Image 1 (tube, helix red, strand yellow):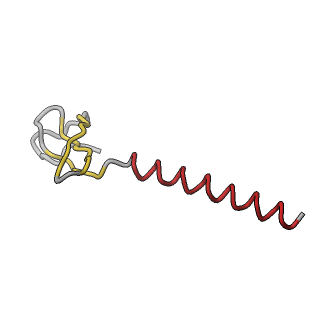
Image 2: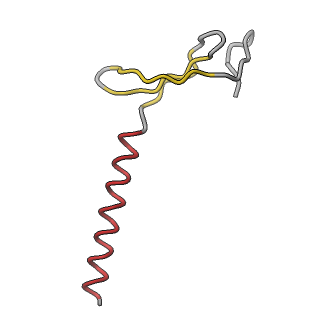
Image 3: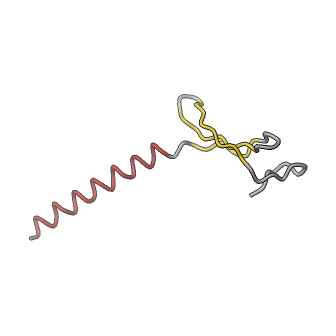
Length: 69
């Protein structure tokens, strides 16, 4: 992926965390010309929730297996 700035076209980016309207976001900017590439929600809270749900599913599967056995 290259910088969208046609005069730059760098492939080196900075990734920074920021806080917008009470939520964490990841901001990606070009290291060369500082063009904003994108702003994305911080994935960590979602990843934590996925791990929590996976653990609950494993627990339920274990309980079902115990009941069937």
